Image (cartoon, rainbow, N blue to C red; front, side):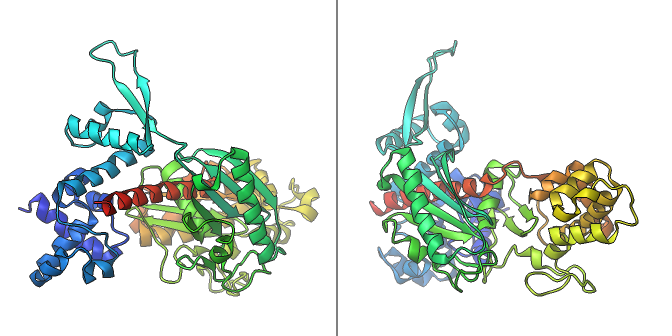
Length: 492
């Protein structure tokens, strides 16, 4: 029978091979192995300790190299300096675990923390005092309402330690929000835009918006921990550029957002550029209907379509940043409906506003007395979805057809990713719960035997346009934890 030590090593080896070193965290190893993160930290310290042990198992001759403060192997892997299982390094790991609990919870006592993390009371007190010293945690006071025993002191995250800024380009507006460490939106600045906007003007609006939210909060730039910028289209997230924009036709190929925005902000501020679906998916996982789920599919559908995919708590991006571009998945090879990408029968095209309106016009003679009669010149998808809920026969026919394509697409995605939950964002939320039932019906019809016993959880998002803002904010907070821990380790 495997010991915990052996099981952790075997699990870590598999995850390192699948996800790579940088994308494998102790929390992911803990989930996959069924062993607590605190136990992993006690045995190995952190991911660095694990990778070193695995190196020694594979090639004992590496021992001397790994003992060096900056070995060529640790440099190759991007590892921090790590000197075995020193108690001090273990303490820093525990410090990170405690900080994460404060981020996730409103207030905690020492007893609360001890129930979450298996440490001694003395050790826990020292860790909390260190976080207080570093101004990341503050004492709230004593709970005088407790009737038994000594009143407990409560602590909470210092939400004013620093702030994050999340920016998202929507089709008709640029949204810029400033958030605290709890991802509470403190102020949002909006700028009207359209498809004709130039890249130069877009960058100028970003700079203006950053200045505005900082001014409104009456803080200095050095209180900003990070800035996330979300855009549509394939992204080179390493370089921070948009390969091409499907939304803004005057943007150049390989629009260098990071390089241009950096002119407005200091080098020490984290600047993260990625596809909007990445941030929206994180928003759903940490704050929305997918809260606490490890395998999540977030689908934004309407005039634009994309999906964020989270597998075992890891966001899928892909070599070319195309993971999640499911709108261009061809569902009907015989279709004459052309997508903006040039192909025919794409998922996005089959459930687009244009096609829904076209179906209405083509079938008007089959369904007389429709309430859409006097709206044909200004018809929108929202009109059709509303009419369907009013039992309008023409609208119900169109919505049923749209649900069929959703069912086919989502059943295929279920077989690929097998998510715990599928969350739908965008205009289709207005179709109501009946639309979700129709989608489930067609999902079962597409792959009856395989999906018959599957527990399909299909939900509408309740975050609206804040999903991407919240996801970006949480990413900035997570970076704070990483940077804090790296700083602590490097100071040893």
